[in-house]
Image (cartoon, rainbow, N blue to C red; front, side, top):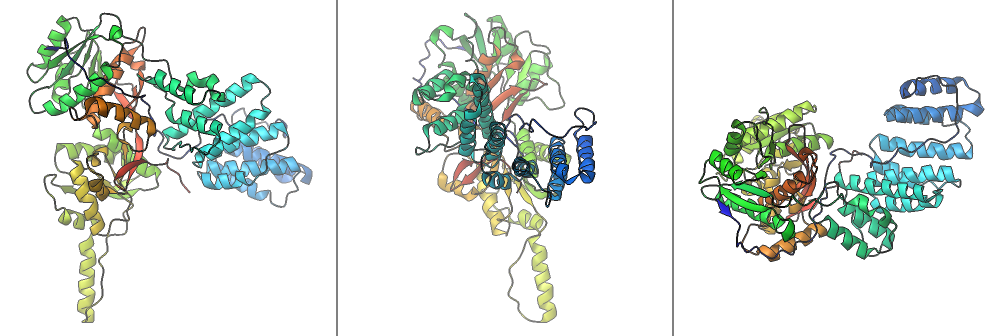
Length: 622
């Protein structure tokens, strides 16, 4: 047992902690209230309330036999109902039937607005933007309010956040009072945050209107979970934008700060600090301490470390309980976590730093937090399906790790209607994967056809081998970043460089930009801690680098994992808090517990460009 008495921690100047996430893998609108229909419209439809399909059909039927003066309003009502029913194809069909129908000025405005909304509902956001951007702002307040609300939704879906902010700013002119303006601002903040979570980069430019710039900066840092640095980041934004209209809703951008743990509390940290996993455990420990020493001295719980490589799991847990620990973080290895589960219900909450097998329920009192490659593999399957890719191949290392990853990927892929048409297994200790890649790409078939044709014709032919043509994606599961750097160039060598390639986060390590250029174009989900070009995360990394220098592997995912383990512990032990309700905006992602008390992480989608991971925009279908 190691007690942290007399421990001299590094002086941390860690900046604010902010999460920018991907959440949704498919293109969609920001989370705004739906645009309301005009206050006046046709009546007499007898469909049950909420039955939009029946209402749409009745409006269409009445419109087909109505007098010419009434056809326009009835058909526009049918379009609105088809959109409410989630059937943009039917909405587009009815809009097409309006050609040649005499419409009034307001009806023409309504037709144009519904046309743009139909394109958005059909997942063509850029087309929707072109349509709504070409429309003049209506002259009446109700119509202008509807138009600007739709313009904001469409701008965000089309990856035009500054235009979305300008639309909301314009709509405030029509708000009848302060409460309505506050509601509009709250909706914009939530919309920006949601758009960021689906992958939209909310980048502001110095030349922009300071109000627009402030909204984009706030949307880029607003969180849904608590963090140790929320208050300082809110203060930084407030100082930068002292007269911004978002000041009145600034509290909505950041949940309440992490509540201090009860006075006199003891926390046990169980890690294998000696033995084969010592290096990894030390990195997790250092990350944990980086968060721990951000707490004011008066609110820090007493922290004790237990070496689970020197003690059995049972002995470490017994000593922690005997010492009066009110919370246990760890153990780290799958075997030790399984041993804790074997001991049954836990009288003291335990945040295990690994997952039990998916089919094994955790006993009461045991919570699980892990950097799971299987979960990443499932995210990859969902993403590539959302990108419109359904048939592909996988390149996977031999062994238990590779088997678990490919099983998770395949199950998710097939559940979504995709199919894996080939798997190439490789030796992770090897360097030349040519035979396996040529086989799965069927380059040899092309060579054989060439030889047969040349033999039949009796003459030498100019020839360039080709791969099979039915591959829509490649999934690379690297055992290490070195494997990814070897596999990606060899795929290009064998004529597969034009196929969209997806991978796991361990394909990238921030050791060499030159080496990472070998995986340029690779797409994968990752934690905010590893992504370049995020000013807030760059500030945190700068502070940690100054504190630790070369004394810790601070740039690694395990360091961020340890940091977030401390944040989760604090969020779970807040006064009056149900531990499973804890939600943290972490270095490793947006963290929350699922029904099995396992931490679910929302990650960001990135693509390697010039050797650096850059945010990848949300999926769009054009």
